Image (cartoon, rainbow, N blue to C red; front, side):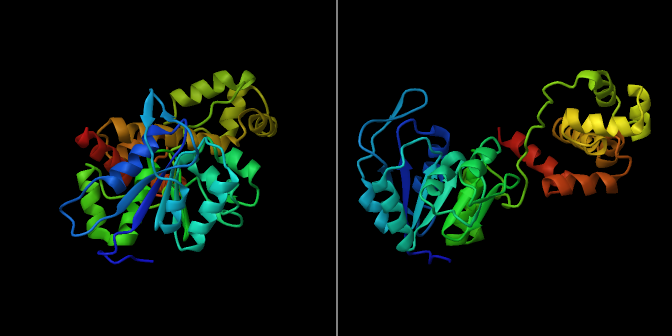
Length: 321
């Protein structure tokens, strides 16, 4: 639903003890900063979720004088991370706000608050990749998608790791005030226009706990990713049959040899795109994909954007530092 430019929606930013300061700062920077260049903008209130002091990392103290009753008038409620207690009073206030037409937007671990209130049951949601398994285990009624930047479920919007909260906030600005205003906010933040929610989180590849027998083979492959690594060649290097390699490789790494090889090559591709000026043809050769078409296919399948789009994001970041 698009808000008229002169409606001045009320944004309520939740504050709680052990507040996630970076996520809180994102909410303030996007929704609370005065923007005299715009004819109208959001109003905001910082809301304390419980009585007592509110402290954040580094000894920061937050003075939030507004209480939960204000949420009944909110157009948007921001949950900047979450590690607080979910009281019945807080649950009731959030449910009342939803009934009154408010949206709830969560950043990173903030998703655990609406989840605890039952507001995400039967809905899609995301969070930081580190918390995705915990969220799915504790709340099996939620369809958790750990591979995207943010999810819009109308009244509930969830975002992934901390910086993805910026993308979600800019997306909300776009929904409320249009693309031109959202781009203006992005420029003032010295950021490129917001990324679409379907883009993948850039999740580090976990290292196997114990590669044992395969350690020399894996090291050799990583050192020579530009070479042809068939299952047969891997088996020969490991001094075992192809059938045995397939079985033991999966048990050891959690992936098939082919999948593991693709992911290692993609990790190298990302490194080359971020840190070198090699063109895509050169990157394809250096990573072992051999052709630009194959590189693009696997890269877009894994990260939901092209190699050049990925590089452009990092170049834009470098220019803004």
